[in-house]
Image 1: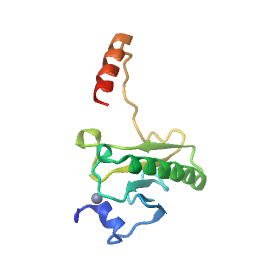
Image 2: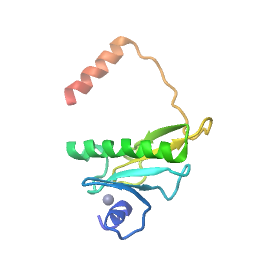
Image 3: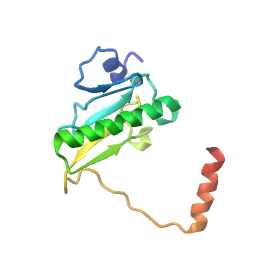
Image 4: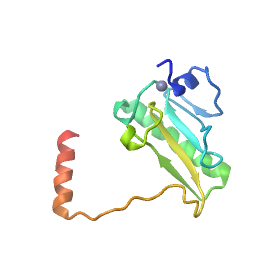
Length: 136
Ligand SMILES: [Zn+2]
């Protein structure tokens, strides 16, 4: 993917303030940060979104994200950390190379809106769980 910004960072063609690197992952600071310390953790291979990750990539990227989240917490003194990971346009994805945002959060920063939730009945929950098990 010659035009992919994250692939170009992996190849060293674009600069990045790197935090962590291992066989499968790379973590660096987001150049458009919600707060200082806003980091991105990506898989090195061009994988468009969550659905395409191998088990090894999936394990590695969450392990790296955990380490980066601890570092963001320790280095920024933030009050909390939110992980944000989007898939496809409808899911809010804007860069189509798998990544996880590690967002330092501060009390009452109002960074992310919370969704309106409903409480479906048990029958509806069980029916959806059955549909999910069928395709898992
Ligand atoms: Zn890419």
